[in-house]
Length: 68
Image (cartoon, rainbow, N blue to C red; front, top):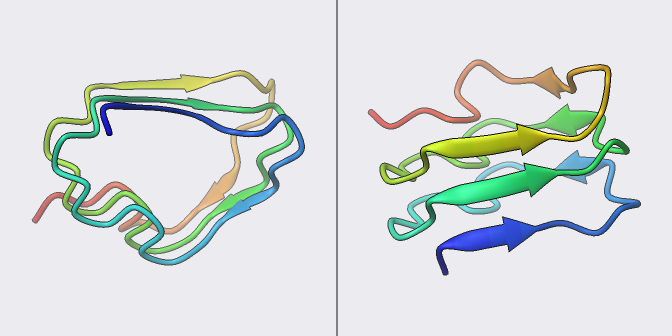
């Protein structure tokens, strides 16, 4: 999986939802997203493009995109 386009009514991406998806390169977050939990995209070392379609950024844990 290299690309994810989420449903337009998604509000939460849970803890470790896509952790260690090492081939993931880009995601498109819908305007409805309100929260991204810890390590949701942790370890996604090839993730280089995150498109946020909303005007207000979601609440995000500090480790949501951690690659350590």
